[in-house]
Image 1 (spheres, rainbow, N blue to C red):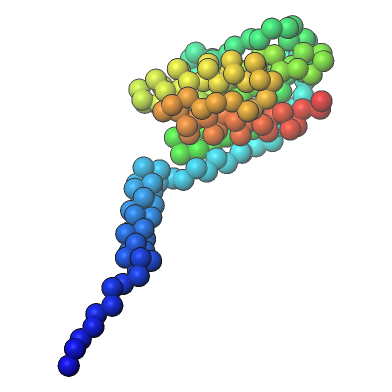
Image 2: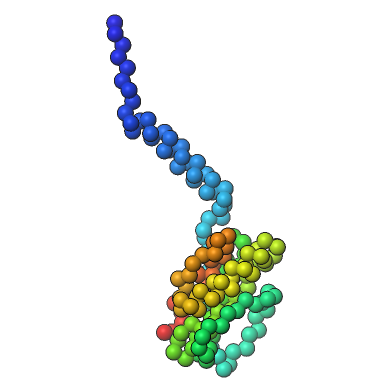
Length: 166
């Protein structure tokens, strides 16, 4: 009797390696990012207030990170909802010109409870502010190492832009 063994097809040879790779990558991703990429917006958008009437009573962490763009911020000032993510919460306030152009972004609250969060946010948030003013939108690039803050920042800024009458 002659026994003939069939060589497994290419699909049967590759499938186990691909399946194990996908599972492994998913597992490592979950270890690196246990909270997921979730950003929750809490609270309502603050009332749109003409800039001549603005008094900021919100206690902000020191320092308040603000960048003013070109143009006079002589229009509305809008305080956004608090964006809550796995490292803490972030809240923005945006100022506009009379022509409804974004001219200033102030970070009212950001994660700063530990040295790592403080260092990341104090270096990344001014970059995000400047890019947002230059772009006039929440379509900004992420700073390496500050992806979660970027997600919260862009979600909060987009909420302000969506609520602000254009």
